[in-house]
Image (tube, rainbow, N blue to C red):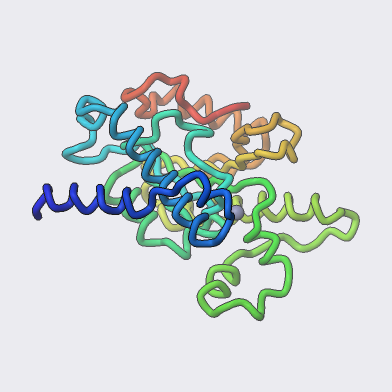
Length: 254
Ligand SMILES: [Zn+2]
């Protein structure tokens, strides 16, 4: 690969997508698109300028993530909410509805090849996939239908309003994914090589635990809050591999 040529192409792209202030003000679609791309390239440029070789050193020759994370593609959910330095640290698998079955190979790769001691399923408040799965999605495309039909929701409780039912669905889906993982990776879990955690990133404070909290709702199939705490203490007591960074990086917020 000719790296000089690549650099030249990047510069050309930057020039092509540069937008004058008046162009942005016009609000036309092409202008907006160029603005978005320019923002991305400006942010990447700032990132490249402020991150020197030392920053990449720990992971340039390989990755040793501490956790495989299965979370939703939702743009409101990002790793900085629960890991300030996710680079090389979290093996991320994302899809609508934070499911294992629709990205099974990727999850397997994290557990079997990268040997992460932790598999975390992260659902989130106001998940559109859960809302869609609750309704009629028969008119969606085959590809989207395939990724919605796999979401199994708890039976509706007529006493609940819509918001409560959606939250129940989000929680139920996370529990289903944990159950799926426990079955799939039963060997690793039995040997103590893998802990499966279910959590909900609540950017709306729907769970009344504090806005922005990552609320742990399930540890190895246990959903009782007392048992969750006990299970988490047990993990710490067993000296789970948290050596790469300080223990205050743990995701537990209870
Ligand atoms: Zn979602």
